[in-house]
Length: 443
Image 1 (cartoon, rainbow, N blue to C red):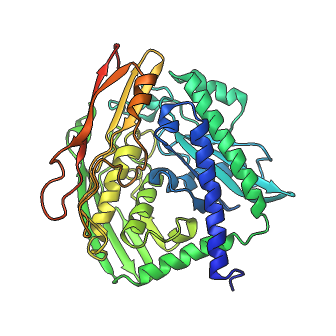
Image 2: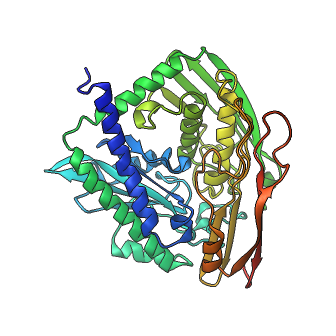
Image 3: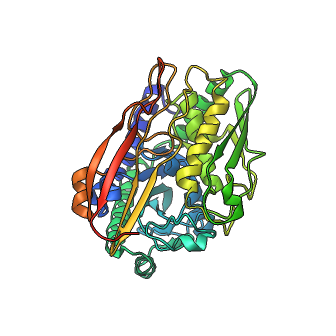
């Protein structure tokens, strides 16, 4: 029996979500790099004592859906009571709770009178963490070791921070952004402590009820969809597109997403770890059914994700995974929406740009990272939006003034690519044209 009436439960959820939003605001406003403070390439969330997602801010879907794996990895490494007040864990290992190496996740426990109330966590994309090329996503990489420094879950100490900074081309940026992440978690822990006596399990139970009710309202059946993703790199298997296959089965109040038939992992970097695939499933299912379903761990309890080990949607070490977070995730989301287009025809539109349009440029002591917006697919209710980030990304653009102030480049043109969205009653949104003049030699 619920301890809270519906109105009180919504108030509790809103208050907790406000904490996550405040964490994100602190992170962005304290960060040093344009990628975080201008583009908001970061996310924040709160977790239950067991590591289940409690609430998240409306930040980056590919971060938020995969962050539970990071918290689980931290708990597995240290135990639920292995971290004391004020301590934080840092990690970016894609094969131990991370996504790709640029995304550094910090996890902090919240203790009140000797009792673990929950966890505060945030993730931010650091523009450079070492590796073979500026930006740490070298397209020619064949192993994760070529993509930068790999951190399993470890306590964030001055010594660990020194190792991280020594491996980056931009250590001052990294120090400033790490400090911002630490501060965001400290605020989250402080705010979460005020909920020590609240029935937090009702938040996740509510998410589960909403998802089960939504799935029950859909017709039972199975629907399949396959798409391909352009690959890159010197290896022979990079010369053909990578195939992602999916069958979605709805059975009463349960859903199964089975990626059997998906290509094996590649020698290039077009590989995603399973946490990224789960995040795409979570996003697509809520988008296609009911975005009002709370994005918490309870909502995923009735959902099973079957990703073949060693495939491009569940890569295993030592696979390079730089593009898994930013490209494979987008195509997995498209495949999920394609399979759900039949049972959810009134909500699923045409595919959008299907990419994050990554741009990485570096020079002496600086690295510029951007994901350029594009067009949203046409929707059943009307045209798609133009010049927006779609699906697994939710970042902003770097303002022209900030870009030219921080980097040796000049923006010559930045506009919508007129007519690129196609024709029809509900056309797709238009893409972006952006011309940059480099004022020094770059890589």
